[in-house]
Image 1 (cartoon, rainbow, N blue to C red):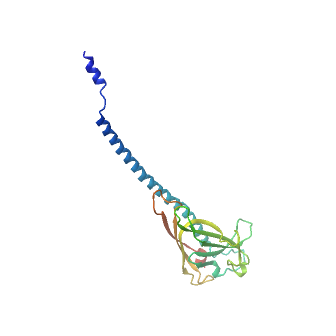
Image 2 (spheres, rainbow, N blue to C red):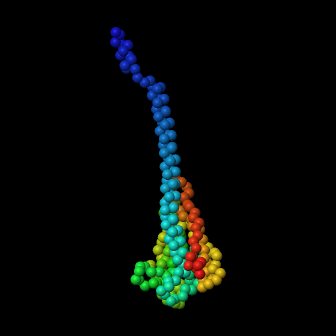
Length: 229
């Protein structure tokens, strides 16, 4: 047996050229993997930002629609008439309010309340210096229901002189329009339908992106108690 030939077979290794080719191929594979990871990570971040906006906005839409549905409601246990001008009022494109009777729980007195939604002053975001606005919800008790209920004749449950509670702080656009005025009855002339155009930005930019992710929501709600009278 020729042991020298076996020794050569067992100790045969890679040439320098083979190692360089292997390193080049490995580099290409790693680069492609990193590039693919970056793309997928960005897409995942975009999806998360959109879902974040949806979760927050859908809760706000539900709250606004619940309040609008109650506009003009008058409990049968109170003798105070409700003024048509108070039931659903649009002060501006970014400021509207509604009045209705409310009872916290059985046995509690029926109170007349005013709920106001309005946009506050703009502010500069910490991420990118973008100008945004805050959406406020003010919950107020009417001081003299028999005489009507307005901002001047109601008391806020929040700090005096403010617009109430901030319910969203990433607003780009908030536009309110009224339509379908009630043609007859005690709420004659009062709008029955409220349409809202709402545009909201994500809390932060997507990594590496030069623009913000924003989503636009258009929804409407009918003032049921105004519509039925």
